[in-house]
Length: 580
Image (cartoon, rainbow, N blue to C red; front, side, top):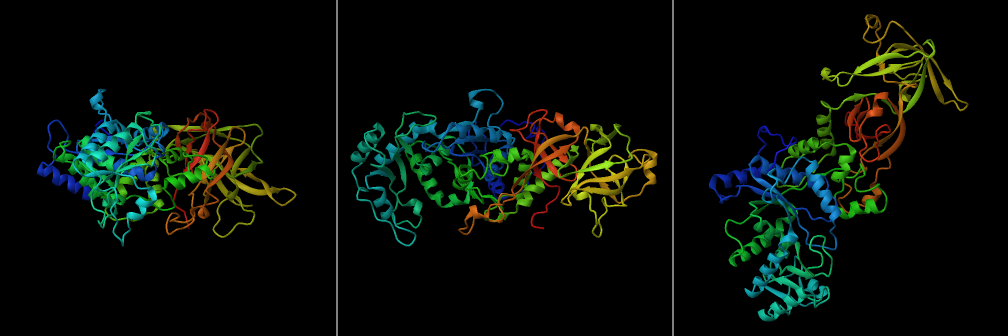
């Protein structure tokens, strides 16, 4: 599998052990999957192309592609496209883009058809059909003509065994004829269905003669109108793994009860000569449960369709396109997935863990800039009218090799509203009448008062500056002040739109316990303001991440920003303050 800059050519540090690595290590030691011309470890990421990937899928992507990378194997990207009514090429395209953005590739770099491990379940429809005919001929499947209601009623429940279908003992020749006529398009949707013949009294509901083929007169994004019968997911998925020689089929815990059928269908197909040993094995791990997030496709779609959010890529959405637009980095997501680990037991991961990984990734590499988000005018009364004095600040305080950024100080500045109090509270060291502060990278000033409008609102603050106090000069050492505030010059600052994003829900578990998640929406999840930033921001390219000193990490929105007119999204604050 191809390594790129995000997967690093150099040997990565040893990954933390988990139960999946222990299984793989054991299989390698025993030579379980030693097969001519094939890697010993082949995993797959198998999304259904019926929606946008979310943060939970990111865990699966990092796990499957990461294991393949670390064991010098390969990982397949495979679309489980067996439900044409819900699938679309749009979803195929965005899934491929999301996987690559996260830093992984299904192409080994040889630029040959054999080197690309991109697959579609629909490419195997002929094989699926052939196996289905074999199952009928071998007495392992039958065509059921019950109504959907009768079938559901006869299935039983966890306390009551199912009842055999009256068509369960249909003659093989009759079932085969009906199945072929289903394929030929003779019947309406729902008229017949092909079921595996297993055990209607099984305590595992998934083994009670599960459906394996249904009639659907629907156009398919990949096969067009060739088929009017389509395999069920639980039937197709294990066969796909076997066809592709997958070694370790890794899925989330909700598929644990599906594993017996996974093994059953592969075993029956192997008996028919379709597959050779060793066949794939399924293993389950705990899905990602992240606080303050919902990942249900139905609920996410509801947020989009009811215009609660602006779209699937709204920066508040847990979709990969959403967190990407929010400003998260692939490296932060990979770090997060590594840090939370892989277990067999469900649990909750606090959202602050994800934000912490982002801060850890951005802090050493995000360039710094100054922004005033809640502007209040500061007038330096004794500063020469029309004069501008050059100031500099490091692009990054820990990387002097990156150089400095430049801006000017003048008579009128923008400062934060919270940096002035007419009557200071205890411990307040910023601007108030009679107090001195340093204008960061500029001069020391002393506050002399303020202007108010007719309603008593403060509209401007006045001060005087000390000409010998400029930062970086010898005279600056003569001034000892406790306050240090940010500012930008009125004359050359850039006015921009800033979107202050926060968590979409106020409840840590909005998707649990039968709660109405729509009633738990955070009314403060987005605030759009007009702010002022230092002049160099006019050249910021879309998707550039940086730190606005004191305020947090921001990104130039990749959709709405254009060069010269950036729009900034707050990615995260400098520290976790949620609920404090």
